[in-house]
Each structure stands twice: as structure tokens, then as C-alpha cells.
Amino acid sequence: MVPRPIRRRCHGAVLWLCLTLLFAGALGLHLLFAAGQAYAARERLDTAADAAAWSAALWQARVLNFQAYANRAIVAQEAAIAQSVALASWSRHFAAFAGTMAVSWPAVSAALGVAAEVAAAGRDLAEQAAGESIAGRAAGIAQLLAGQELLQRAVGTFAAGAVANEVARSTDTRLFAFALPVAEPVIPTRRFTGGERERLADVVRRSLDDFVRGPRGLDLTIYGLPSACFGHPLAGPEAWFSELHKRGGTMLESGLDRWESGDTHSLHTWVPMRGLFGAFLGCRRVEAMPLGWGAAEAGPVIEGWLRTDPGGVRFNPVASALADAEMSTRSLPGAQAWSGIAAVRDLDPARLADDRFPVARIAILARDEGAAVRGAAGGLRGRLALPDRFAGGRLWSLAVAEVYFRPPPVDGERVEYASLYSPYWQARLAEPTEAERAQARSHVR
Image (cartoon, rainbow, N blue to C red):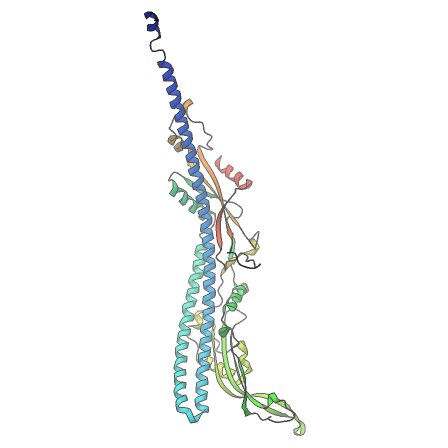
């Protein structure tokens, strides 16, 4: 048994050791908690920066996709205007053809007369519908062009920074993000005017259906109607009978500011040609009788005659002249509302580093206040404070995203290059380059 005096001297000696160990454990737990809070703040800032950069790139990709959809819609509207002009031309031709038949066939003139009246009423209705269609579609094209310009102003370094900051603050109101002025922040585009509109015009021509584009032709030999050269031994069999020739088509004038459409239908025959002393020199085809004719135009200037030869309508010269005469007296209502092939936006190849697969890089720098991070970590001061190396008293994060063109996979070896006619622009995150890191460091000092 220990003597009583010694027991009194040892009583309570372990208490100080226990208190020291408890304090050290509590301090260790606090430091662990503080480190976890700082790490969580860092992860939250990195995630917000990535989301901000990706959102800014996605916004630009969506603007480019809108431009592509708008260009496609403009192509459809331009093609519809050509269809309206072709409809007016065809309806005029059909009305003239019905009227000619009513006069040429007196035995059934009553029935054909009714058909001619119906055809004339259909022509008037078609002209009204075509004119309203041209005016409405021209207004639609103007709205699409205005939308392209409006959204084009919503991309760039400032716009990317605004989108990025909005996304970052939606994550945490303490955060702030802005875009760095990197070398290629946007995909460069420009409006193509004048003769540069030929690319859009070519797309529109390729989009026309066979009826509108033409040629709306027909060549028929009438074996029951012999010509003046029938049976002549010096004339070939092709000159022995009369022929029907139908021509028609729709054409965009070379200035790209005028659609023309025409349709002519005539009866042709062959007549002998005589030389000196009545010598037979052969047979030639002549237009014996125009059967149907019609033409229409659309553009800022209405001239009342065909500049071009759409579908070869001049093959029937008399019918073509009658079509010109009708155009001069029956202008298509609303045809002047269309001012020509639109000046749409497309990629600017002169400013693209890669004109086939261009890429735009958007660098976003996000920050969080260091004091807020320290407060969330426990707020210790002095020697017990968690050591940090916040540049400028803030926590920073750099994120980079790219805007790129990637169409869906297709069979075969065909490769589609980037353009503003295909809405396949996308966004992705990318690894920052050394130049971008150096530029970021210059902002955080």
C-alpha cells in the first residue's frame, strides 16, 4: 500500500496532459475542417469557372447556329419568291392558251369559252396570291437579316464576360467572372453584299424544283398536220410535218436583283426556201401560230419585258413578244417589294486561321474573395490562422472553352467544312495555353 503522503502529491497530475491533448485534437480538427472548407471553395470556384466558360462558348455557338438557320430560312424564302414568279407566268400562259383554243375551235367555242373565263379568273387569283407571297416573304427576309445583325452584336469579349459573370453569380453571389481578351475570342463573320451574294444565289438555284427551274419544255411532232415541205424529195422527213414547241423556265438575272419567268407555246411548220429563179434551197422552220404565252418578273425595278431567255422562251419569238406586251400592261402586284438576293452573313475566310474548321477560344477568369473563404474556414487569426497564398487577397480560377464546327457523321468520304449554312456549331472545354495562363497571371497580381 502506498503511503498516504505520496498519494496526495500525485492526485490530478494527468488532467493537464488530457487538456493539452484535447486542445491539440480540437485544433487539428479545426485545421482539417478549415482545409476542407478551403478545398470546397476552390472546387466550387473551379466548377463555376468551367460552367461560365462553357456557357459563354455555348452562347456564341447558338448565335452561329441561329445565323445558319436564318440563312437556310432565307434560302427557302428566296426559292418561294421564284416559285411565285413562276406561278404567275404559268397562269398567264394557261389563260392565253385557253383563250387561243376558244377562238381556234369555233365548233366547241361555248365550252372552250367557259374554260377560258375560268382560266382568266385563275390567272387573276394566281397573280394576287403571287404578289402577296412575294411581299410577305420579302418582309420575312428583312426580319431575318435584322435578327442576324442584332445577335451578331451580342457576341464578343464583353458579351462573353457578361454571360460568364451571370452564370458564376448564379452559383454563388460572391463570385465574379470576366473574359480575357484572347487572340481569337469569336468566329469572324461578315455580311456578303454585291457580287459576293453569288454563293447564296447558287444555293437558291439548286433549291428550286424542276418545274420552277425548268426548262418547262415540250416538243411534239403532229403527224396529222403536214407542212408545206411534205413529201419534197430534197427535204428531210423531219420537215414534212408541223410541230408543237413549248418553252418555259425561271431565271435569276446576272445582277442577282431580278427574277424572270416565262412560258411560250407555239405551232411551228416548215416552209420551202427559194433562191434565184425559184431554185429550192431547203426548208426552214417558222412559227405559224402562237398558242400560249405568259411572263412575270420580280425585283426593285419593273421593266415590263424579259431581259433574259428563261427556259428558251425566245424559241417562240411571236409568243415571246406577246408575253412581253402582257407584262408591260399587267405588272405583278407586290413584285417590287423584293429587292434582290439577300446580303446574308457568312464566315469571313480572310480573318480565319483555319477556313475549313475554325475554332474560337474563350478564356474566363473567375474569383472569390479571400476573406470570405477564410471566414468559411473558421476565422482564426494570428498563428492559428490557416496559411494561404491568395493572389491579391482573392481566390482565382481560369477556365477555357472552344467554339467549333462538327456536323453529324455521314456515310461515305464526304467532309463538310464549316459555314453559316449548317447549324452544327458546338462548345467544349479546353486546356488553357501558356499564353492564356500568363495573361491570367497578369490580372491577379
